[in-house]
Image (cartoon, rainbow, N blue to C red; front, side):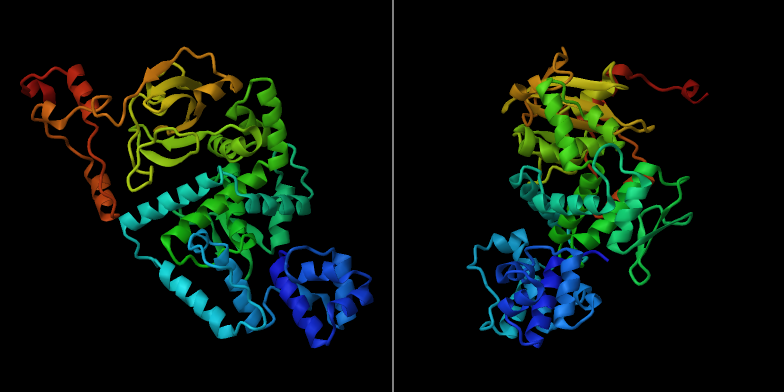
Amino acid sequence: MSFEPAVFGHLLRHHRKERGLTLDALGALIGRPAPYLSLLENGKREPKLSQIEALADALGISTSELLTHEPPNRRAELELELDRIKADPRFQALGLVELKPTARVPDEAISHVIALFEMATRGGEHETVEGVRRATAEVSSWLTEQDGYLAAVEQTAARLLAASGHDGQGALTSRHLNAIVTYVGYTVNAVDDVPTHVRSIVDEDTGVIYVGQRNSLRTRQARKAILQTVAARVLGHARPGSAFDRQRQRLEEAYFAAAVLVPERAAVSVLTAAKKARDVSIEDIKEQFYVSYEMAAQRFTNLATRHLDIPAHFIHSDRDGVIWKAYRNDGFPLPTAAGAAEGQRLCRHFGARTAYASPDRFDIHYQFTDTPVGSFWSATHLTPEADPRALTTGVRYSDARWFRGRRTSHQESSQCPDDRCCRVPAGSIPHIRVGHRQQEHLVTVLSGDAPLPIDTAELVEFLARHPRRVGTSEDLE
């Protein structure tokens, strides 16, 4: 099982007090000072296995009694839950004076604080589209405030990598992945019948993670699916009580998987050397650590500001320019609704859309784009599927000097959100009726998401390529 310092600290304090020992007395028995034991009891330090054994001997209990994941009593359970909600950004945003659960604070007071917070943030499974959009915007803002870097998740990933024996150089091997899974208390079983709409199934009673066989789940996908499942446990994710909780947890789980597959120390070494050579590229991260281009790009944005002093943006979009995922801390002008970029349509002059018509579409499409808020450089990779997605990483013009592809001659100018930039008013289009793909349209409506309007500029271009004429029976032959 994985080690949880906070739970261990409560167990240690519980058994010490049961034996009637002070910190000084227990310290004398194991040859360690009282301040060290205080750090252990407050969950701020992890002991070595030999020290756990020494503590158990001194307390007259087994090591398993100190390593259980169950809090020793109701009070400890309440204090652990209070710690969890105090770490929640929404709780921190309230600006309340910190509640320290000293002996004078009764259990009922802590319980009331927890209950009130959960009631105030509960969204359940019945979130509206507006609620989900708002939660998406809040999570995006939360990540941007940290410049895309989650220190606690990085530390957890580094701890598990060290436990597996992986030095961070090169791709994570199956041996190291299995070591991580075992360390956390799981085993992996690859089967043929995992439902297509889930990444994995976890039997918490038996500790088995079920994933698809290699014929249905590629190696990169399998590694990511397993690590995201492991993340839920090692990051202490409880059942989400709101759309914000759910999306934050998903983001942290994806971040954890990336931090294990592309370890911080090794990746920063690669990126720092590349910046010095003015040759930073996402492809090098992809190849060095054997991950997808998307993961390499997102990992770059995690580390770029903290370690390279380069703000950046990342966009995952489709052929129509609809945003599936996005992050920015460089001021890039993404379209938003209620603060969320997901589901919005990009300007047709952005690299994420011009890449589809670029002669470099099967390579990397580099581009400079002038916008009302400044100029930006971007690199767009189209995925190899039949209906490729665009994965775009970009930076401000002044930072382009550090990147491979900075000498590109591709340049566009965008005036969005001005409608005269790349959209055509609907009134300028002749009377045309568009035949939707009915089943896709129906599923979109039933899912609760309003379908995006037809890109009128694209429709005008289509009509220009096909001059209007009266149809004849020959059209059907």
